[in-house]
Amino acid sequence: MNGKVKLKLLTYWKDENLECCCPSHNRCNKNHGCEELEFTLDPYADSKECMKHDSHIRINGRVQQRR
Image (tube, rainbow, N blue to C red; front, side):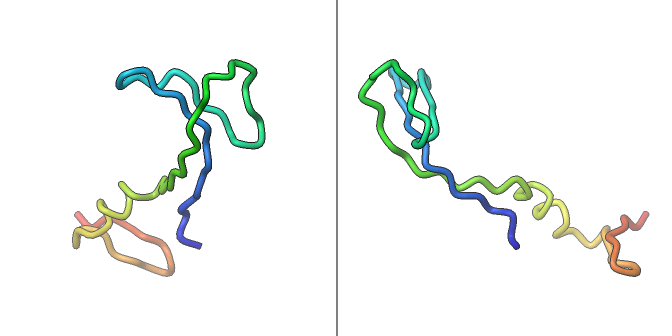
């Protein structure tokens, strides 16, 4: 499993501000005429970038930082 999650959300933007954001299966009652957007969330993206450096090694299946 790579940790990425795909989400479909109903969003309403006013200028550059997000005014409303709801899951598509649980619409709000505000009737803004929301737009459906699909997002991909990767909660491990920053940790993958950090682990690219050679200061981390794998010992007995665990990742440890070398000093």
